[in-house]
Structures are given as structure tokens and as C-alpha cells.
Length: 268
Image 1 (cartoon, rainbow, N blue to C red):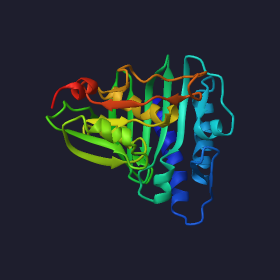
Image 2: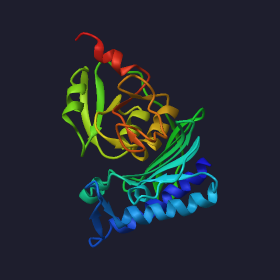
Image 3: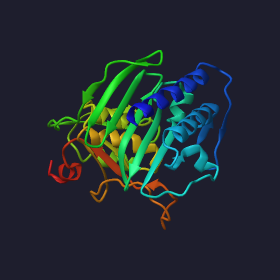
Image 4: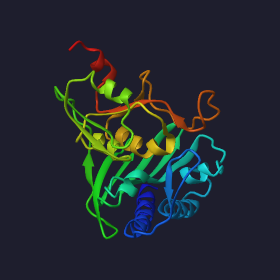
């Protein structure tokens, strides 16, 4: 299935780039005020159609469908899809947007693909089989290279949200010995941690499961972890939450092979 999902992501990415190259594409604000473009809709239509063939019995929870009230019933196994993660980055034309497709089993992201079409980068991870990265040129995937998280250096490289850097995130980062803080958009932040290019990605702000599942799968497959603020693995399939909407995430921290909460608790 991983090869199939890579192909789906690349096809969806091609449709996004077709819109990205134009100056006259349609956009609007959703109910929550976030932007959505015709590229989001086109990519999601492709992904939903392909997944219906690849895995017709597996429900698909997709961002744009959910925003319009089309939220399927889910059991232990389902897909999470964000057809264009980083719409603000898309609109700002900085290239930091991705196609995210993940398979969830029993609350865990066991398979994930993150494709950054404007950068020509694709990442994939599967539980128990590791994580990989490849370059994509004209829709063709180059040689895959194994990636893994790195042991933490004395001073951490932190990657944070370009468009959603909260004061809470700044305060949390200040608790660590930091070498550098780098901004990035979309699920590329997870991928930077998974590839050993950064040590920590804290997100003390609101996200939805489709924003995180694919990148989370890549981080976990690369030997890292994504933990909520109580130290537990970020879980998926969260419905009927008294404090928030279906599929909404709590704050979390993605990291390499160390406990970021223990590091933060150490005296300076």
C-alpha cells in the first residue's frame, strides 16, 4: 500500500502545482476563517477517488469533506488526509506546503506519506519498516534514502511553525538549550525531525488529526516520538471530545530519541 499512497500523493501534488502556477485561482474562507483554494479541492478529489480503488473498505477522513460536514464513521482502521497542508504557505508562494496521507490503526499512524511538490521532496514511513526520503522530478520518484532521527546534541535545533508560532510555543522552547530555531510550514516540520535535520518540533496550538498523522507516522518510523504534554503518544480517532471537536489534537511535541519533557525539566 505504501507504493500506492506515494503514487496518489504525487498525482495530487501535480494537480496542486497546476493551480500554483496560475495567478487567478479561486480561494475562499471556511467557517473557521482558514483559507481554502481550488487546489485543496482538486487534490482531495483525486485522493478520495484513488483511495476508493486502493482500499475501498477503509473509511477516509479528509479535511475538506469534514469541513463541509461529510465525516464518515470510523473504527480501528481508517485514512486521514490533508490534501494541501499549509494553505497559507501556498498562498504566500514559499513552497512549504504538503500532501498528507496516513493510515491509522488502533489509534496509531502506522503508514504515512508527506509530499512537498514545490520542493520536489517526498517522505514515507511505515511502522516497523523505517522511514525514507526521495526527490521527485517531473513526477518521477528518485532513489529512496533511509532517514532517522538523530541523538540530541548539547544544544537543540528547533523547528517551529512559520504561520502559527504561539507565545506558549516560544515559552516552551525557552526551556531548552537551543542552537537554532528555524521556521517551516506544514508537515515539513515533522520531516525535518525525522530526517535528523532538527531535534524538536513543539506545537502548543490547535491542530487537527489530518494535519499531523502523516508526519507523525514518518517521525515514529524514523525512531522518534510525538507526545502530548502529559508525555503520552499522540492518539488518533478522537471523537466525541467534551472539550473540543472530533479529530482535534491537544498540544504536542515531536522529537528524536529523547524525552523532551525530561530535558526541559533539567536545571540550566
